Length: 117
Image 1 (cartoon, rainbow, N blue to C red):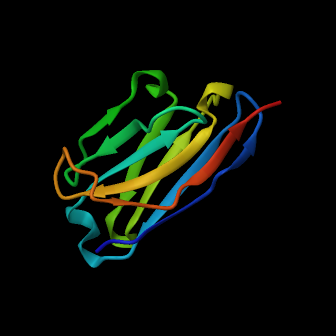
Image 2: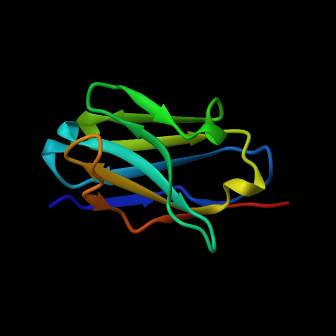
């Protein structure tokens, strides 16, 4: 079992930046594929970014060049640096951990990001 706790959400103006963090509970954190999803009101969960234990990254098209996913395995921490935020980035953001690239076995409780003037 892996417990994931997100932090760093909040209210930001369009064009602003936020950094989300996710701390995992297990020492085997480095073995997991980690990801960030988001869910906007009335919409389904959407994959934002995913990162393998070896450092391979993928991004959803709309965040490419604006968001950066990173991990610090020594601190069991996953981060999402979000720049040039847009109102359409408003959503609850979730951290996930999976045993392989296609799995999202564990989810955090989510953190709200609101982009508004």
